[in-house]
Amino acid sequence: MEALLNEWLWQEKFWLPPGVGWKDIQTQGADGRFPLPRDLIYTLPLAFAFIALRYVFERLIAVPLSKRLGVKDRIRIRAASVPKLETFYKQNRRQPSQSEIVVLGKQCGLSQRKIQTWFRHRRNQDRPSNTKKFCEASWRFVFYLAAFTAGLASLINTPWFWDHRECWRGYPKQPVAEAHHWYYILEMGFYLSLLLSVSVDVKRKDFKEQVIHHIATLFLIGFSYCANYVRVGTLVMFVHDSSDFLLESAKMFHYAGWTTTCDSLFVVFAVVFLVTRLVVLPSRVIYSTLVVSKDYFKPFNGYYFFNALLLVLQALHIFWAYLILRMVYKFVFLGKVERDERSDEESEVEDEEEEDEPEEDGDEFSWEQRKGTINSKLASLANNCVLNNLTNQRNINSRLPKAR
Image (cartoon, rainbow, N blue to C red; front, side):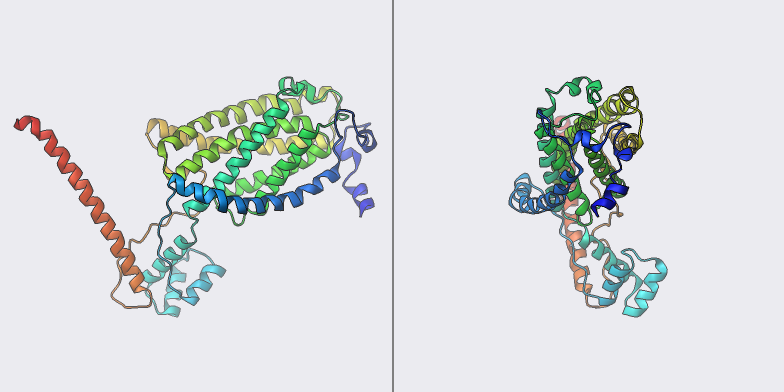
């Protein structure tokens, strides 16, 4: 297996510039270690450790914190037990077509309206709660904030943080400091844990883009470590971490209902994101890898692969920047941010809570429908009474000066 990997995967022409071999960078340096591909094997158990740590964090810290901040979950009516509909829901689709509703109605002996109501209840039942979304955002916030702080502390005194030409002087025979080695390992382990848990996390509107982002990031981190692109790789990770923790904090306050704090943090995030992802990253980092690096070595296969991954990330940044600018426009000029444009909303169409009135037939879940309808109407009636009282009181107050 090792011989096969050395022959096909670890060929020096793929990973290193012409004239440089693995033996040239596999010696221990006085200022640190040289990166070796086998170091990345630790990222897999580390990813599972992150998943376990996240499980403990969400239950011991995130859930109590969500209650302290006032996160509230919507109460949804559970769909009645109808085996044929449940089988169709799990094996076929969550939102049947009109013809499928007709067929299901004949099989179950239910009206089309009740079939539609059942599927709406069932979809709402599977929608993640605000507490679950808050826990996910808080976990990412903690990691991104820690990664940003650690990255800043380890890079602030390095020469390539200020002069990007230092990323390539002496390449690839550049020793890697212990702090930067673990910076790489932890970042790759975390993104691998996100990819492994993507099926159970909240599914957002940009789900496909997120998966592409995670895969491109893993390839980028893994290749840059093996090819000793560590200096420029640390800059790429630091640029990404600088805005991610702001977005996650805005999400946390959004779920808690702190609208003013959420919108303020989102504006700060938007500014940082646009500056770092659309200005700093392309003008400094990508320009350095595409143009400046050729002053120090001839382009090789790894050069094209690394830059192709960077360009994929940059394309995703442009896509997200478009969504962010739309949200900022609505916030500034319309005074609000539309709910369906936030990146933390699910990709599925929002289902309204119980709106249908119960039908005459007394089937097995008509009482649940009636109860949901009564509760929604009582809440609506109470709100209308409050609004009417406030309106009447405001009208009375406006007339008092004239009466006097």
